[in-house]
Length: 493
Image (cartoon, rainbow, N blue to C red; front, top):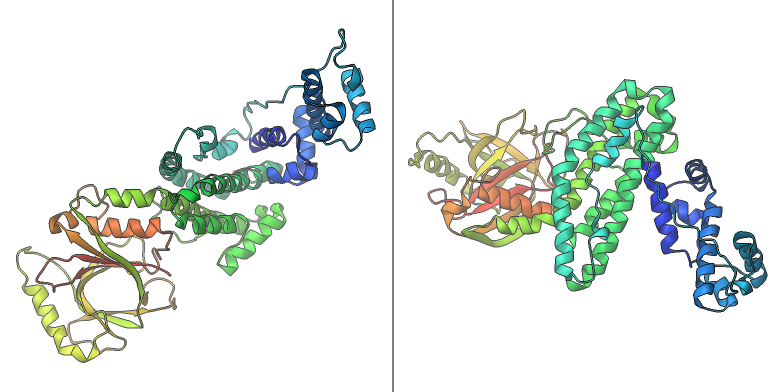
């Protein structure tokens, strides 16, 4: 049903630019369509050509202006984009049946051509597929924002929309993936409709929404209420919507779809476009990360930069962030032992581990705190439980004592793609305040330090390399005999 929405958007654009110099190319570009294609659709639905519609609206308004005395004939002709008085007079006579100079005569009658409103319900056929477009939480902020609101209040409305979209859109993206992989929906006779749904529906609608969001936020930027990270998140999303990806194999499939949509008849191309469903939280393991997965993550990235800063601040109850920074360390080797806490009050396990590591003092890495490292061996949290290891970061290639295990870290991505070596890039959050509150698990995904650190990262638009290179760590700044008051979270800088 997006082509109906496109026509309404075009009509809205025309009304707002009726006195400006706009052509069919400008109108078609506004709704992300080729001029030839959009003209055919417009005529098919309205029974009038796009050019005729613009002309009828201008001449109708020109008649009203002359009747109300809003300018001389020459001024009104120029206002509604007529180059000469002669061409305006001829067009006016054909439309109204009288000359412009006769408008105020006692028996004169003018025609009024009202703006079109498209309100059509499509039943049967492709209803379910078209419904996918409307199930996304599209922004209607422009219908709500008024000048009476402060910039902070306007920005809060954007934040509230982003929270709602974050709760709604992930499942719709998964439905989109299922639809693309459903062979019964991709018979030859459905290809044109499917192109409307995916290209002129979902992708074009997100482009339009991003453009509007930029305009809203740009108008508020002067008041310093806007999180600057949103701009790079929007840039990344727009890049993917334009068909740019980071993976050569995926890029080939996306290029094929953009250049010739009939390539979607190829099951393998559809698989690369669809990817696998990742669930509402976006953390389910996938065998194939496709184009829709990219869009899903980009959409989430925009939403996170909008609402996460406030959310992370509210989560700091009884404690607060003392410092927060990103670091990239040289190659390192974590050496430690798997942590299995059976007696919470007994520190003998921790003390024994770190006493043994004290013997490796010559191999210090420069980040020499006692830590509790957590990771899932590069797999999703839905298939691999979290494993905790007490130990320290040491220099690369440090000899591993008997009975200890190790995990290597490198500043840049290396093969294999999943699992160690992990990236020695991380966020370091240091907390102050109530230690018990820092370690609270109530109303948190994991615990307070984990959640707040992660959410600050998401709010700043920094990438977390989940699941391939994902790891976290609790840091004991004053040694393992004391509670941890800092947290590390893997990032990709």
